[in-house]
Image 1 (cartoon, one colour):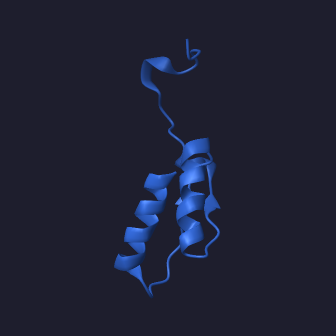
Image 2: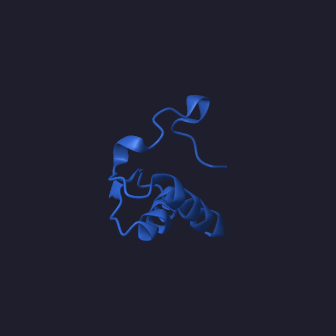
Length: 65
């Protein structure tokens, strides 16, 4: 969480006064990071399933174990 706040702080310096949007996958950690960064810019992130990984190679369909 602190790393996401640091990223937002540094991005703010680089992109100040520019319009942009934040897109994120719906995966939990990615979503949390996007929300922290978006808060710095007073934005609402746009969450989309299309940014999730599509291919897990040999792991497709297998359990985490």
